[in-house]
Image (cartoon, rainbow, N blue to C red):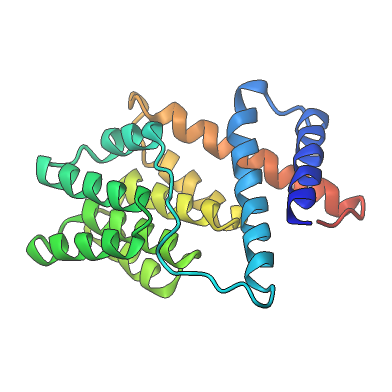
Length: 215
Protein backbone atom coordinates (compact mmCIF):
# COMPACT_ATOMS: atom_id res chain seq x y z
CA UNK A 1 0.00 0.00 0.00
CA UNK A 2 2.81 2.41 0.85
CA UNK A 3 4.39 1.78 -2.56
CA UNK A 4 1.09 2.66 -4.25
CA UNK A 5 0.83 5.82 -2.16
CA UNK A 6 4.37 6.84 -3.15
CA UNK A 7 3.60 6.25 -6.84
CA UNK A 8 0.43 8.33 -6.62
CA UNK A 9 2.28 11.11 -4.82
CA UNK A 10 4.98 11.06 -7.50
CA UNK A 11 2.41 11.38 -10.29
CA UNK A 12 0.61 14.19 -8.49
CA UNK A 13 3.90 15.95 -7.80
CA UNK A 14 4.97 15.86 -11.44
CA UNK A 15 1.61 17.20 -12.57
CA UNK A 16 1.69 19.91 -9.93
CA UNK A 17 5.19 21.04 -10.82
CA UNK A 18 4.20 21.32 -14.49
CA UNK A 19 0.91 23.08 -13.77
CA UNK A 20 2.50 25.64 -11.49
CA UNK A 21 5.24 26.47 -13.96
CA UNK A 22 8.18 25.25 -11.91
CA UNK A 23 11.38 25.73 -13.87
CA UNK A 24 12.71 22.43 -15.21
CA UNK A 25 16.06 23.31 -13.64
CA UNK A 26 14.37 23.11 -10.24
CA UNK A 27 12.39 19.93 -10.87
CA UNK A 28 15.05 17.66 -9.38
CA UNK A 29 15.30 19.76 -6.23
CA UNK A 30 11.56 20.19 -5.80
CA UNK A 31 10.97 16.54 -6.64
CA UNK A 32 13.54 15.44 -4.09
CA UNK A 33 11.89 17.59 -1.46
CA UNK A 34 8.47 16.17 -2.29
CA UNK A 35 9.68 12.59 -2.22
CA UNK A 36 11.50 13.12 1.06
CA UNK A 37 8.19 14.04 2.59
CA UNK A 38 6.47 11.13 0.87
CA UNK A 39 9.11 8.68 2.03
CA UNK A 40 8.75 9.98 5.56
CA UNK A 41 5.00 9.39 5.35
CA UNK A 42 5.52 5.85 4.13
CA UNK A 43 8.06 5.05 6.80
CA UNK A 44 5.80 6.51 9.48
CA UNK A 45 2.95 4.32 8.24
CA UNK A 46 5.17 1.25 8.39
CA UNK A 47 6.22 2.07 11.93
CA UNK A 48 2.60 1.82 13.06
CA UNK A 49 1.99 -1.62 11.57
CA UNK A 50 1.80 -4.34 14.25
CA UNK A 51 4.26 -7.21 14.38
CA UNK A 52 7.03 -5.38 12.49
CA UNK A 53 9.67 -4.29 15.02
CA UNK A 54 12.42 -2.06 13.72
CA UNK A 55 16.05 -2.03 14.77
CA UNK A 56 17.72 1.24 15.69
CA UNK A 57 20.69 2.66 13.84
CA UNK A 58 20.85 0.04 11.10
CA UNK A 59 19.48 1.96 8.12
CA UNK A 60 22.23 3.35 5.88
CA UNK A 61 21.81 7.03 5.04
CA UNK A 62 23.05 8.12 1.64
CA UNK A 63 25.34 11.14 1.85
CA UNK A 64 25.08 13.24 -1.31
CA UNK A 65 28.56 14.18 -2.60
CA UNK A 66 27.10 17.43 -3.90
CA UNK A 67 25.91 18.34 -0.42
CA UNK A 68 29.34 17.47 0.99
CA UNK A 69 30.95 19.82 -1.53
CA UNK A 70 28.40 22.50 -0.64
CA UNK A 71 29.16 22.03 3.06
CA UNK A 72 32.88 22.45 2.43
CA UNK A 73 32.22 25.65 0.47
CA UNK A 74 29.81 27.27 2.91
CA UNK A 75 31.77 26.42 6.06
CA UNK A 76 35.37 26.36 4.77
CA UNK A 77 36.17 24.00 7.65
CA UNK A 78 39.57 23.30 9.09
CA UNK A 79 41.32 20.05 8.20
CA UNK A 80 40.32 18.59 11.57
CA UNK A 81 36.69 19.55 11.08
CA UNK A 82 36.61 18.16 7.54
CA UNK A 83 37.95 14.85 8.83
CA UNK A 84 35.40 14.78 11.67
CA UNK A 85 32.52 15.47 9.28
CA UNK A 86 33.78 12.91 6.77
CA UNK A 87 33.99 10.31 9.53
CA UNK A 88 30.41 11.12 10.55
CA UNK A 89 29.34 10.78 6.89
CA UNK A 90 30.96 7.35 6.70
CA UNK A 91 29.18 6.19 9.83
CA UNK A 92 25.85 7.46 8.52
CA UNK A 93 26.35 5.53 5.29
CA UNK A 94 27.13 2.38 7.26
CA UNK A 95 23.87 2.78 9.17
CA UNK A 96 25.34 3.87 12.50
CA UNK A 97 23.89 7.33 13.12
CA UNK A 98 24.48 6.94 16.85
CA UNK A 99 28.22 6.49 16.30
CA UNK A 100 28.21 9.48 13.94
CA UNK A 101 26.70 11.68 16.64
CA UNK A 102 28.99 10.33 19.35
CA UNK A 103 32.06 10.96 17.20
CA UNK A 104 31.05 14.59 16.69
CA UNK A 105 30.36 14.98 20.41
CA UNK A 106 33.89 13.75 21.12
CA UNK A 107 35.30 16.33 18.72
CA UNK A 108 33.17 19.07 20.32
CA UNK A 109 34.57 18.12 23.72
CA UNK A 110 37.99 19.08 22.32
CA UNK A 111 36.77 22.14 20.40
CA UNK A 112 33.63 23.35 22.21
CA UNK A 113 33.42 26.68 20.39
CA UNK A 114 33.44 25.21 16.89
CA UNK A 115 30.26 26.21 15.01
CA UNK A 116 31.01 23.78 12.18
CA UNK A 117 31.00 20.79 14.53
CA UNK A 118 27.86 21.97 16.33
CA UNK A 119 26.09 22.36 12.97
CA UNK A 120 27.21 18.90 11.92
CA UNK A 121 26.02 17.44 15.21
CA UNK A 122 22.63 19.14 14.89
CA UNK A 123 22.12 17.73 11.41
CA UNK A 124 23.24 14.22 12.39
CA UNK A 125 20.95 14.26 15.44
CA UNK A 126 18.01 15.30 13.24
CA UNK A 127 18.77 12.38 10.91
CA UNK A 128 19.17 10.02 13.87
CA UNK A 129 15.92 11.16 15.53
CA UNK A 130 13.90 11.43 12.32
CA UNK A 131 12.91 14.98 13.26
CA UNK A 132 14.39 18.27 14.39
CA UNK A 133 14.40 17.05 17.96
CA UNK A 134 15.18 19.13 21.08
CA UNK A 135 18.74 17.77 21.03
CA UNK A 136 19.17 18.78 17.38
CA UNK A 137 17.72 22.24 18.09
CA UNK A 138 20.13 22.70 21.00
CA UNK A 139 23.11 21.88 18.79
CA UNK A 140 21.94 24.24 16.05
CA UNK A 141 21.28 27.04 18.56
CA UNK A 142 24.83 26.63 19.81
CA UNK A 143 26.15 26.85 16.24
CA UNK A 144 24.06 29.96 15.53
CA UNK A 145 25.35 31.59 18.72
CA UNK A 146 28.95 30.85 17.81
CA UNK A 147 28.63 31.97 14.17
CA UNK A 148 25.93 34.65 13.99
CA UNK A 149 25.22 36.18 10.61
CA UNK A 150 26.77 33.31 8.66
CA UNK A 151 24.77 31.12 6.28
CA UNK A 152 26.05 27.65 7.22
CA UNK A 153 24.25 26.83 10.48
CA UNK A 154 21.02 28.45 9.29
CA UNK A 155 21.06 26.59 5.98
CA UNK A 156 21.64 23.18 7.56
CA UNK A 157 18.95 23.76 10.16
CA UNK A 158 16.63 24.45 7.23
CA UNK A 159 17.90 21.30 5.51
CA UNK A 160 17.06 19.28 8.62
CA UNK A 161 13.50 20.59 8.45
CA UNK A 162 13.30 19.70 4.73
CA UNK A 163 14.48 16.17 5.51
CA UNK A 164 11.74 15.99 8.17
CA UNK A 165 9.13 17.18 5.64
CA UNK A 166 8.52 20.57 7.27
CA UNK A 167 9.06 22.88 4.31
CA UNK A 168 7.24 25.81 5.94
CA UNK A 169 9.77 25.81 8.78
CA UNK A 170 12.67 25.53 6.35
CA UNK A 171 11.60 28.45 4.18
CA UNK A 172 12.50 31.39 6.50
CA UNK A 173 15.76 29.70 7.47
CA UNK A 174 16.89 29.34 3.86
CA UNK A 175 15.80 32.92 3.16
CA UNK A 176 17.98 34.04 6.08
CA UNK A 177 20.87 31.90 4.82
CA UNK A 178 20.59 33.49 1.38
CA UNK A 179 20.51 36.98 2.90
CA UNK A 180 23.67 36.17 4.88
CA UNK A 181 25.51 34.88 1.81
CA UNK A 182 27.89 37.25 -0.01
CA UNK A 183 26.77 38.19 -3.50
CA UNK A 184 29.90 36.69 -5.05
CA UNK A 185 29.88 33.44 -3.07
CA UNK A 186 30.03 30.46 -5.46
CA UNK A 187 27.37 28.59 -3.45
CA UNK A 188 24.85 31.46 -3.44
CA UNK A 189 22.98 30.09 -6.47
CA UNK A 190 22.63 26.70 -4.75
CA UNK A 191 20.85 28.29 -1.80
CA UNK A 192 18.72 30.44 -4.11
CA UNK A 193 17.68 27.38 -6.15
CA UNK A 194 16.68 25.42 -3.07
CA UNK A 195 14.75 28.39 -1.69
CA UNK A 196 12.96 28.70 -5.02
CA UNK A 197 12.06 25.00 -4.97
CA UNK A 198 10.61 25.30 -1.46
CA UNK A 199 8.58 28.36 -2.51
CA UNK A 200 7.18 26.40 -5.46
CA UNK A 201 6.34 23.46 -3.22
CA UNK A 202 4.54 25.69 -0.72
CA UNK A 203 2.70 27.39 -3.58
CA UNK A 204 1.60 24.01 -4.92
CA UNK A 205 0.49 22.88 -1.46
CA UNK A 206 -1.56 26.05 -1.00
CA UNK A 207 -3.18 25.54 -4.41
CA UNK A 208 -4.06 21.96 -3.51
CA UNK A 209 -5.62 23.05 -0.22
CA UNK A 210 -7.61 25.75 -1.99
CA UNK A 211 -8.88 23.12 -4.42
CA UNK A 212 -9.86 20.84 -1.55
CA UNK A 213 -7.16 18.29 -2.34
CA UNK A 214 -5.66 16.60 0.68
CA UNK A 215 -2.70 14.14 0.78
